Length: 109
Image (cartoon, rainbow, N blue to C red; front, side, top):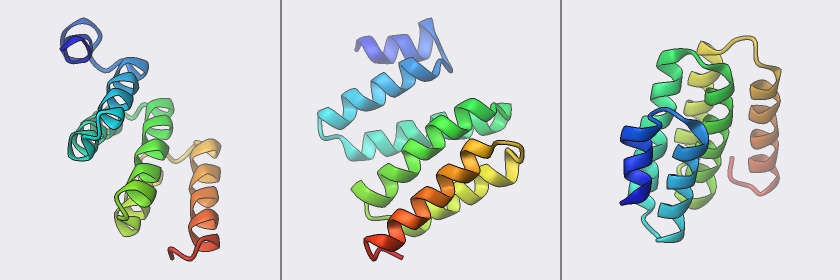
């Protein structure tokens, strides 16, 4: 598969390629595969302490968990984990607050 080759061999760790692969799997309806790809990408970016990647991937992963998989608690834990590692990202904190506000507004928390 093209996306697997790109993410594993040509450009491992490249955010845009990884998210394109995740989007492809979402369109194919492979939610378990999407969760696995998000999990790997998120943990990889956390290990590198890459603030931009953690913020970008973490927010998309959290929204996927909360709204597509109905795993609100896991989504909140994921963002807590991200903010405990990346402490200087205003975007991450604001995104976390926005997600929590949205979840509260729709009655999910």
